[in-house]
Length: 288
Image (tube, rainbow, N blue to C red; front, side):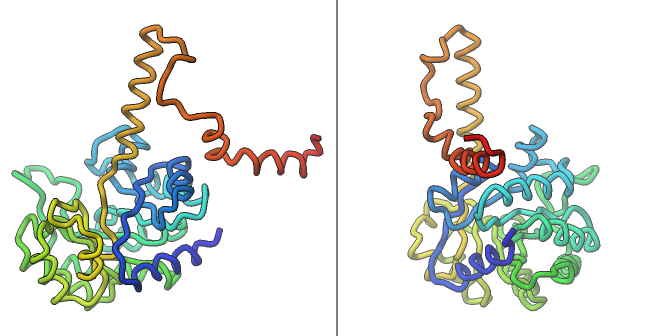
């Protein structure tokens, strides 16, 4: 597998001037579809890993091993450069180093490490809380130490803007940039003014989650240093609805040939790479 080539493609996007919307993927087939449709980057989130592997909500019950295995399955299915949400690195700074090692071996092009206290500790009241700035810096250092391929992108991530305010988010971003992270992922940024303040404070590429109504202009985002802008995780939600509706219809007696919204034979053959398997069968099994 040419993991480094994918990482170099991802870095080239960061060095550009455009904002990219990744395709949210969760398994081998969704990754192939995203690649076939021309998405430059795939996004595999921790929440989607929990949903696709365990059928569980985003409560950090998925293990690093399970997440890395699913990321590998996604990566081996094609040639999509994959960005993953590695949550809090599955523990303390030592666990973060291990997380980077495992996900690098799984072939990801880039990953984010966040500074939220995860999983929710006993007795915590209210919403999410952050680790200290000092611990966050230690986690970023450990992540960078765990990297073996220098082309792998490691991004810091903070939700401070939504928890403790924009000033704290900027302070954390500047500290993580000083350590050497390649990019910063922000959650809770809602306006161009907030984004401009961030752009003035740091010199590394910006990733944004949850693009609100005021942050829909890709050209504006690109000018302000945003290179990755997430659009949520609609594909798996659409897939769940389609499976639900199809099974419900079958259970209620609808004949299979009357079902709607079912993939065509041609689409199935494309996503399965049926022509490639037919060629290999002929070449290697002498079957016709």
